[in-house]
Amino acid sequence: MADTLLDGLARHLEGKALLTYDPDGTAGDCALEHMPSGPDEVVVLTLYGGPEPDGKLGYDEPNLQVKVRGTADPQVSRDRCKAIYDELHGLGPVTLPDGTQLLSCFAIQARPASLGVDANGRHEHVVNYRLYVRSITTHRV
Image 1 (tube, rainbow, N blue to C red):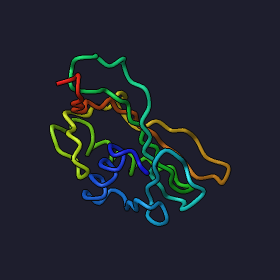
Image 2 (cartoon, one colour):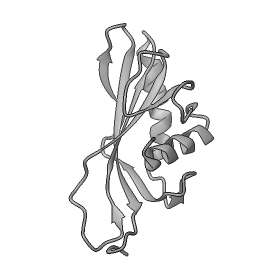
Image 3 (cartoon, rainbow, N blue to C red):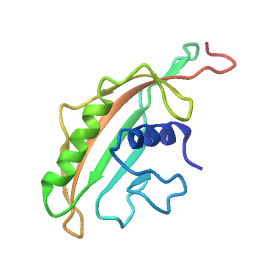
């Protein structure tokens, strides 16, 4: 089962025609939390870390990594990573398709960074983001 925030982000990006998301992971060009061997051109969304959460405030600040793999031409992954950057940087407040309230999303780097090529000569680029997500629980309002 996918993390609901990752699922919501993938569905949002699909709605903007930036990727094709299959929640079952059997089709499409988006994966959650792992880099598949195929297809060549793929977007991987992964949540990680973030600052220590406040025990009383009703929001969390997870980080998001968007990794894009393309072809032997570095322009392919760079351009797609930049298009996703253009959509996500500054986004919010918005309710994502899974119901998550994304208060804001900000890139923590100025442009897609090259990760070089994988073992098959396919270029990869990455951008990391800080998310502010509404998270109401019994003890947080």
